[in-house]
Image 1 (cartoon, rainbow, N blue to C red):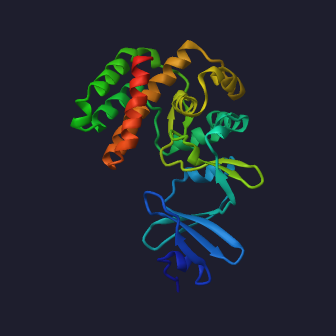
Image 2 (tube, rainbow, N blue to C red):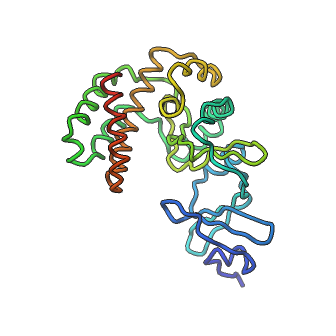
Image 3 (cartoon, rainbow, N blue to C red):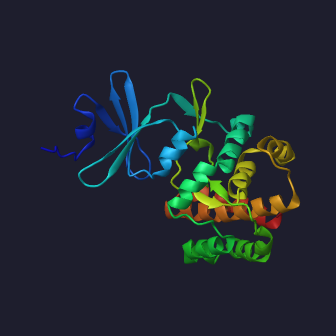
Length: 267
């Protein structure tokens, strides 16, 4: 007789203590049994297995399917901490991001999962549609969209790699033995690497250090790269403004608007 597996307890056994891990979706959990610790997630993308094999996220231990059809993944629980702002400038971050952008297995898997390369013109239209009427009427938002339209032809790029698209320092995990991981891959896309590079440099690296940081990453700082990075940074700032407004985080929204104004007036 086949036993029904309907809950996390059915998979792990009653001796495991399971608790929510937080997060926006409520689909992540911690599991502990004496010295054993796991990070569990419901319905992770199959992409997780390749990320694990590439050493970009903590090791995937197993995958199980519940009676409901939900898939549960278990990763080795890592003792560590997120990077701070200052550490984002360091060589290890540049080298891991380069490894991600150069990874053929990651690109192959995302392609198999139906991801097509992101086109900047489509992204721009999607962002316009995602902004509510109140924000869309603000002069700074209108000016930003005008600039994005005018500079769109310069953003064309033949290079398409796997981009994380949310390289906030909170998503970089440094283990106690100094191993670096980049986690939370739900928003991954195939796109111009300038999407990741622009926001990382804009947020964490002084402009006079961009050239040396990019040399460590493996490319030269060119006028075209600067223009592409700035274009995607403006896009991401607009999305951050809307995200914070939706959640009534008005102080954060205002901070992003100030940032956007600086980008638009000094492109």
